[in-house]
Amino acid sequence: MRFGACIDTLYTELPWNERFAAAKAGGFDYVEFWDWRVIDIDETARLAQEAGIGISGFNGDADFSLIDPAHKDVYLAFLKQSLAVAKKLGAPSVTIHSNALGEGGIVVDACPSLSNTIKLCSMFDTLKEAVKLAEQNDVLLNLEGLNIYTDHVGNFLETTRMGAEICRLIDSPKLKLLYDVYHMQINEGRICDTISEYIDCIGHVHIADAPGRNEPGTGEINYDFVIAHLNRIGYKGIVGCELFPKTDTADAVKAIMALKEVAKPN
Image (cartoon, rainbow, N blue to C red; front, side, top):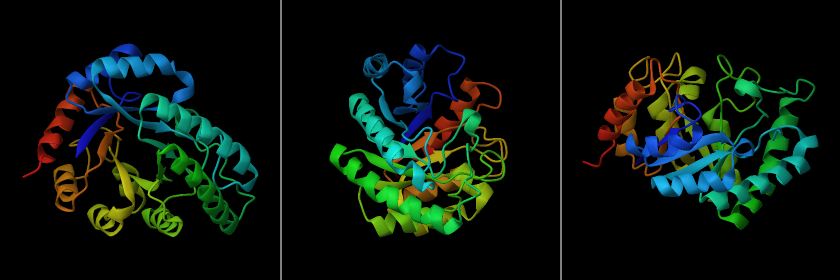
C-alpha cells in the first residue's frame, strides 16, 4: 500500500513548484491534484521526476457530466485530452465523476429535468465508450462517488453499490471505483463492510476524517482500523490523502505517516 498527497489541499503554504519535493521529503510515494488545465504540464512532469515522486492522477472530466446524454460527445472529447495528459505525466489513472464540478467542488448542474433512469442510462452508455479510450491509452478510470450532504449537494453517484455494479457490468480492467472514505462515511457508513464487499472494484482510496475533512484522528473515523482492514483484505493500491490540515501541513503529515506505519506489511 502506497500513500499519496493531494497537493491542492496539502503543502498549500508552498509555491506549486516546491510541493513535489516537500511531499517526497514528507514520506509520500505519489502526489495528485485536481485540474490539469491550470498547470504547466511539462514543468509538472519535470518537477515530479526531479523530486523522485510519482503522479497518481488528477480529474479527467472537468465541465461535463456523465449523467447528461447531451454531454456525451464533449465529455469523451475532453476525456481523450485528459488521457493524453496522463500519459505525458506518467500518471496511471484519472478520476471521473457523475456530475460536472465547479469552484469548490460545487455540483454545476444536478440536471433536475432528467429522470434518474435517464441519468443512470446516460452514465452507463458514456462510460462504455470512455472505457474504450482508457483501454487504448492504458490509463485507469477511477469513478468517484461524492457526499451529497456537506460538499456536493446534487451529485448523482452517491453510493458505492451503484458505482461498483456499473463497473462489474462494463467489466473492464480500466474502470474501477475511487472509494473516498470521507464521502462514503457521510453518505452510507459501513466503511469496512463496504470495502470488503466491493474490493474487486476499488482502484484508488481517498482519506480524510469526518466531520471536517481534516487529517486522521480529528474526527469520528477509526483510520487505524480502516487501514489495517485494507491490509487484511489485500489492497495493494494507493491511499490518496485529499484532506485539509486542521492546523498546518506538518501536523497533518505527522498523522498520515503514523497511518503509513500501520499500512506496512506484517
